[in-house]
Image (cartoon, rainbow, N blue to C red; front, top):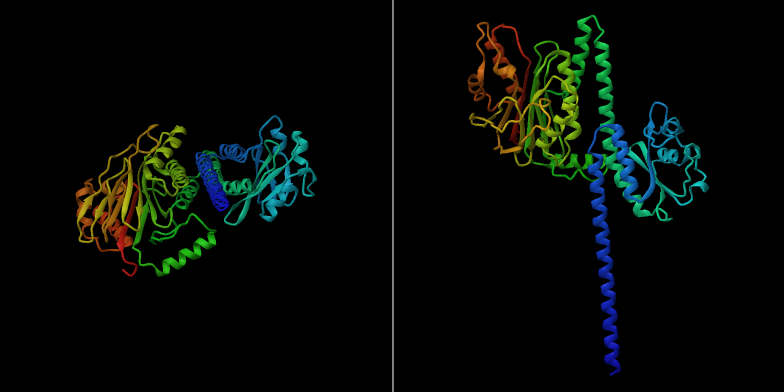
Length: 489
């Protein structure tokens, strides 16, 4: 009888032990799911704006909420003076706080910026690194704090700090890991915001400068430099799909892993060739192409409604907005919708037709969106020419709340996609006859096996031959993508 009781007691104890373990696992999973949800929401908020002041305010609000802190601040590094400063400071004494500058290494934030290491402090006033510069200005008592660096390409560009854990508690290791996870997307968002702010300032300065210039040559030279700086440095380039997850690891680790995979990969490649020839020294046509991640290639070709300096400025803003918005996991339709709203807010009289595509270099699947642009063509390796028709949206900047639609097509190995602006089809000879779509389609059947660069050049040479010396009346841009040829082809 005693043995049975003992056996039963052991069974109950084992069951309780297993239940406790299972409960602990469940709580751990629930905590991890909650952490993932919070990080996802914070990432969405951070990427919801490209304007620097709005971004900083969002970061401060989100970080305080995530770690349950009374206050939060982000301090940026001034590389010119090697100091830290508050770009955004709220409250009645915000102006005074913005005047404060911390030397690199000064205070806890300066120490984090200098060392690149995170720090948790339970009693801030007793820490030997503590600086009372800010506290004295705002009359705020700091009990405890958590401070992490914001790094971009290995360089510290700022510091996020949260103050006073609510409920008279201290910040723990989980809070530190959460804040570090927020710091990573913050660095990218800040870089985009800084670039956009610099562009806006440059464009405004350019408008003010060029409005008083008397020499047209100076204006055109400045505008052409701006326009060409936003286009790819190379007119032809080859990309290869890389079966590697770029979401994890440092930049050096990603580069090393990707290099090794590329060397041993037999993946298909995408070869791009492009050219641009303005009717004047500067124009409104534009293109861009670059890999979004290890397997997706972004392709853009567009045409601004105006010519000259205003068109070059509008083009620069459009390309900057597209680059800032187009991130892994996003598609052309939603990105064009957001860019259109940004352009419409400026109340410019200009607009831009655009064709935007996202090519999966591994499968050949092409997701694209047409904003009122010329219909592209798919050219098979046998020379069959097929118009790539789409449900067209309005040009960018033409109307608020315009709808843009994603469509998909699967390319076969050896297929080419040919994009162009209306400077091709509307090119005229001395008798004002146009080159036209029929002549273009006939020409494309003969460039099927050419390299992308050669095909683009052949198209331009044919237009010049047709014009036979007649002046070019419109800007010309061409972009050709060959997909599915082996790396050795």
